[in-house]
Structure formats: C-alpha cells, structure tokens
Image (tube, rainbow over the protein chains, first blue to last red):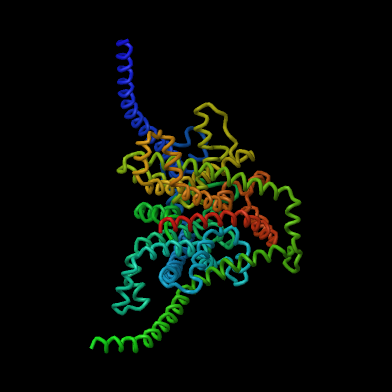
Length: 301
Length: 311
C-alpha cells in the first residue's frame, strides 16, 4: 500500500521533472527546427541568383562544354561583364531605364504627396470616395489595361518611345504611393497643423515645413517602391516598345540578349545581374524602409 | 466692463467669423481640388478610361471598323485553347497562392522563434527573391531548367532520379512556372506574416499558457484569429497579382509547349499584340475582371475593417 503510494509519488515527481525536461528540450528542438528551415529556405531562395552569378563568370567555351558540375566554375573570367559594358546597346538600355525610372519616381512622388496631403487633412466633397478609389486602382493589374493603353499610346504617337512608358508607368506607382502616404500623413498628430495654422502658415507651408519632414520615412518608403516597380516593369515595355534603342533594361535583356538559337548564357546572366543591381543595392542599404513600404499597404492607411 | 466685452463679442464675432470661415473652407476645397487634380487625371485618363475603352474594344471586329457585339467572346468560348487558358490560369493562381501562403507562414513562424538579434540578417537574405525584378530572375530559372544542361537536373541526378524535362512536357512546364512564382512571392508572405506575428500581444500567449494550451492550440486559438485579417488580405491580394501574372510565363515558356501554359495575360498578349487582333485580346484580358473584382471587394472590406479596429 505504502509502496504503491510511494511509487505513485515517484511517478508523479518524475512526471513533473520529465515535463520540465521535455519543455526545455522541446524549446531546443523548436530552435533547431527553426534554424534548419531557415538555412534550407535561404539556400533555395539564394540558389538562382548565385547560379546566375556562377554562370556569368564562365566563358562561352566552358558553358558549351556541358560536362561536370554546373554549379562550379573552373576558369572564372570577367569577359561577359566587359563585353556588356562595352556594348553600346546594353548601356543604352541602362540609360533608358534610368531616365524612365527617374522621371516616373519624380512624377509619382509629386502627384501622390500632394494628393495624399489633401486626402488626409482636407475633408472635402468626395474625399473618402476618392481614397477608396485610389486603393481600388492599385488593385487593377497592368495586364488588364495594356491592350486599351496600347491603342491610346499608339493614338498619341508614343509607341516605341520611352516617353510613352513615362506616361503610363504612373498607373503602376501612383495609387500605392498615394495610399501609403495617406496613412503616414493621417498618423501625424493634428496638434502640429493647428500650431502651424496659429503661426499663420498656409497649406503649402504646412505641407513643406511640417508634413514632408515628419513623414520622411514614409516618403522614402514610397520612393523606393516607385523606383523598384518602375525599374522592374515588364508588361508595358514589352507591349509598347519594339525598337532596341528605346528599350529599358528588363525587356532589352529578355528580347535582345536572348536571340535566336545561340544563347550567350554567360552574357545573359551577367546582364540580368547588372540590371538587378540598382534595386538590390537600394534594398541592401534601406532594408527597413523597404520593408516598411512593403507592409504598409495592408497595415496603414 | 465685462458685460460690454461680452456684448461686443456676441455682436461682432459672428459676422467676420463665419465670413472668413466660409472663405477659408472655400479656399480649402479649391486648394484640395487642385492638389488632387493630378491624381484624378491619372486615375481617370490612365485607368478608368482605358478600362472602359477596353470593354468597348472587345466588341469590335478584327479590323476595328464595326461592332460585332459579343462575337469575340462567342468565338473564344468555342476554342479549346481558350478553355485551356482558363484552367491553366486558375490552377496556376490557386496552387501558387496556397504554396506561397503556407511557405510564408512557416518561415515567418521560424523567424519569429529565433532570437530577435539574428532575425534581421535572415530576413534580409530571405527577401532577396522579391527584390530582384521577376523578369530577370526568371531568366536565371530558365537557364536552370535548360534541357541540355539543367543544373536542377544535375542535383536531382545526384540522388539518382531521372532527369526532368522541365519546359518540354506540359505538366512539368506548369510545375516549373508555379515553382518560380512561389520562389518570387513567398518572401512577401513571410514579411507580411512576420509583421502580423509581431503585433500579436505577448499577454495572449501567456494567458493561453496558463490555461494549459499546447503549441498547436496556441496557434489555432491565438495566432490565427489575431492574424486572420492580414492573412486574408495578403492571400486575396496575391491572388490578384498571381492571376494577372505575365512576366514569368513570357520568359519561361512563352505559352508553350503547344499553348498549354498560357495564362490570361500571356494569351491576351499573344492574341492582341503579337497576332494583331486587338479586340479579341481585349476580350481575353477582360475575363480576368470578375475574379479580380471579387478579390478586390474582399481586400477592401478587410482593409477598412482593419482600419476601424486600429482606430
């Protein structure tokens, strides 16, 4: 009898201890699972760009000789990069991309900051309706509009021109930038504008002296978004531009470097990596703003 | 004295007060209108008008000289390729979004579990697929799928499995497109879910622990309900983007083999721009509208509901 209770006690005791033990081992196990999953995911997520880089270091002879491990490079060479940087057509793509993206970012930020300020602070007839409309236009994908826009841009005589792209890219960037700027502006305390009004500031001064400086993180996030979207835009340039000297990078590389039967894989990969560099560099330096902009769409506004 | 000032106040204040106030509001609404005018121009001229024009275009005949009503839609309904496109689009979007959501959810959890100090580094590396322009990273995938020298098949052959005809067989080509789309989109889900996970109050987990909840119960009764809104917004938003995807299909297969991997966007492009039948291309892309409208409605509802909660 007493032995039974004693054994029960022991069992209970060991039960508690084993539970405590299992809890910490459970936690350690969870941590290992977490690291194992993250390592696996990182390898898979980074494999394609790494492989692109490996290929870009290979000479054409090494790529043509399809023997052995494709993930290794035996005779690294920079010839693909030097060939591209000496290729006027490729440099022209880069220049076009920079002109288009620069102008589109500028246009987008002016339009969206002005509109977001008005929508966040000046209640006027239809302002709520317009804010909803902005979000809805953000949800309209470019692939729904490119055929009518093709006709419209063609009617304006802007097909095969970077100006046609500058005209239509704001449809990709303006709605989202306005939407997240409304969110950032709305989060600025009303006391600040009241103080400015008492000091006799007009609306424009209020915007430039208070709202823009205070909402700077939001403006940086929106600018990054506008930059990456117009840099990566693909549908519009593919539809509207067929002459190489007016092409931005994305379609330039996909249509001009990928030619006929002989694929210069090394050069294609080098070109794609060079073209991906500006957004990646911006991301590397401004990651927190980038992520703030990414998550702002659903969490702000 | 005090009575005087009071009477002065009541006598004088209303007139200049209301007058300037009215002028103020009038000026304010004028300024507000001018400030939103560029935005209105973009929305009306570059989104609303093209959308309406697209509907009009879809009713024209090939040479765009006369209206044929719903003729383009009738012709599309009669072609097998079009029904392939419908199926392929739906299968592609649904499979890819589910995979992205699950992988993103899993990775967000794993990131949330590790010490905060290391999270930034891992997050930084895991978001890279999202940062590279998809058209360019898809070129890399294309080369990895290359039939004669596929680096993926090399890895598969190490395990001893036979090589996979990635872009040659329709079924594998479809899988290849979904894989690339998941690779591009999963980091976005991860980031959204991680932000949502971080906003769940720690007290809820403590309360659940005191009530003796297991890990799964914590997930089921605390995490998921708290994240439900973000999950639905992200899924619906991704459904829109994935459904309307163009660049991956264009670069990877361009619709082949035998037009079996076309989605709405690439088929509309093929018919409308490359074959020059603009009205029918417009009709194809209009088929995206109903599903997009449904998704957009629910996204909007989720976002407004979330805003109300936060207020």
